[in-house]
Length: 420
Picture 1: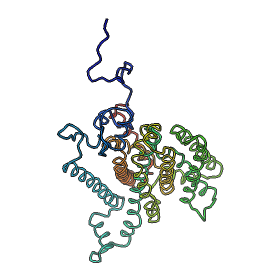
Picture 2: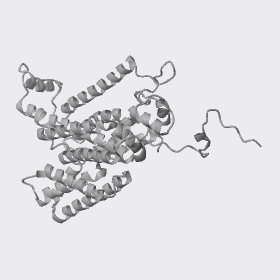
Picture 3: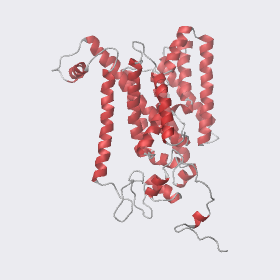
């Protein structure tokens, strides 16, 4: 009896595929529809086109399919965005920037003490122009010395944590990765507790300096443990968990052995994350480190796209996997260390924001990282404002609010992706 004819359009590779349902889609990789828009297929050529934006069958570079989805030339192939596409993209960027600016102004306005929109105009106008009558000294100090540094710190820290989460999710190919995966947060907590409880380096370092030293020590321990085993994604995750648990145990040991009730309460409040300590020196440190780290991560966007397909695929595309992973780990560790040292450990920002932004703009990191930074900044500014007024006059640690909001939002993202 003759064999069944092959389906029209099926190639030799299709005849070798086993029967059964297709494998589940990786949440960090572009969907099949996106790959088809980029040129179809799943081989090295298609992956190269998805990462580097090359059109199938030609040497010309263009934007990948998930950016130019729906744009087709008259010949039926992928087309470059026209004037309308560029206009929409510019409007989207301007809208995101306007949302961030509006959130910053609203964050300064919101609080237990009523300033009012007119008071904000007077506060900013008296500093920027001499023709405006200044506010009373107490309200002026409230705006310039307390609320404005706090809001700016929240925006910078939120942007850092969101970008770190997006980078680590691609480097480790783990959808549950967040900025605290490397054990840096636990090291910062141990350093801060050592300074507060034991008084080690209290005069020279302070709480922020101790937390930063502990974070760098934890990251150094991580690299020391990985020096011979390599920077494989699974080993990074497992070693980060081990380092984090070690420094968490040291923190608990110090608190139980030497701290009294008041000190334990103060340390616990710091560990939950709070923007209350933010001052202009905090803004200066974050404003120096955060843009450099975000720029370094964005310059590695193509490498992150390749790493999202796996180490072997990234290496076949000419990406130095070990060198790139080491650079990205250093960048994320530095951003996380500064964030935790200044405001404590704030969870869920680096976990839920990248997933939400990826759902809206797609997985390509050249687009994902800037929007993740903007979304993280807006999210943490509004979360901090909610923490200030939810139980006024008592202030709730912002880490508690991010956890309360983050859990249902993360479950919603998983439900929308069909993974729950």
